[in-house]
Amino acid sequence: MKIKYKLFKRTFPLICTKCGKLSNMSREYCENCGEKDSFRDTTKEDHLRFQET
Image (cartoon, rainbow, N blue to C red; front, side, top):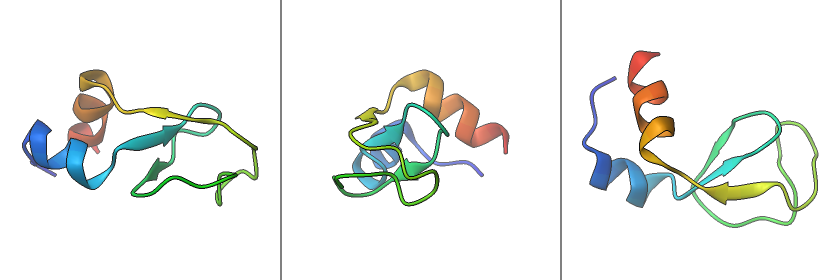
C-alpha cells in the first residue's frame, strides 16, 4: 500500500518492538502479543516495510 511517510508517521506513530504491530495510540501493552511497555517510535525503515506488504 502506497502512503507518504508524513501521513504514515501521523497515522501510526508507534510500533511494538516484539511483534512489529503498528499502533495509532499509546497503550500500556501490545494488544497483539501482550508485551508490556514494548512500543517505540516508527522509523523510515518501518514505513518501507509497511509499503512492501
